[in-house]
Image (cartoon, rainbow, N blue to C red):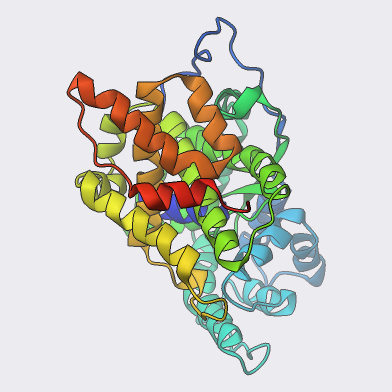
Length: 387
């Protein structure tokens, strides 16, 4: 999985730009000369520090060293990420961490007889342990990157995040800088940045280690997602959503969350910038097909039977990319056709995304900007969810 794919997983499932295409600087809000004040963003490096002590140990790590890693909030976040689609216990993770310098992955018994437990053991042995093992031989690289991460201006990420939230609302967030495989979705209330995982993936040529600008922009997007979540939840709480309606609302919320962050923060209000990203380019290159995919995602959510066993964990990268790209495509139309207020209104109430997109497409048509409309019946149905 390339770095851009990792970003899509982190942003879309947790509700995910490249170093070169991130915004050059925080800009003022539309219609305002004053830059948005920063989101309160607290960076915590404790887990990375304790993990580095274990990885750099000349002898097998002591119980005290392992206990220190396991006690950190960052490790608890890692376990939360791992358990999003698997079953992994703290004891299992501790055993793998203790064997980081071993010649092979340790034997780990599944937590139970279920498929999620089996998946957890497989990932611990084939995903987590190889990264930890690599880390024991590259402590100098990890130490250098940990030191570099301390110099990053995370206040800037907070300013960018707040600038593109409705009403410039505050969104306190915690950034956990870790080493230990937090490569799953951001589940909140913490944002993570895993130095070990990204360094290991660079070593096996899956990606390049991200630049400082990429890190700041990604953290800003994640902080934006966390800040938007309670705003959307407030709207959701006022509605009487039935099963299909609830699924459709949540899908629209994901389109709004991933799409607004991708467009306003990662793309800096430019689809052209997103088109230069491989993961966005594949879906944005054919807007009509992308919009048909969005219709299917929302329609399927509305009409799927309540006992359908479809599992969000089985979503493919293509589907995740469609959510981020489709949302960005619709926000581009809304923003260009109207003003910031329209985009803010959709971020507050995701049900309005499809009807506002269609209205924007109508407004852009006389300018020679033709855009495929979303099925009007589906858009109207979405706008009335919970009524």
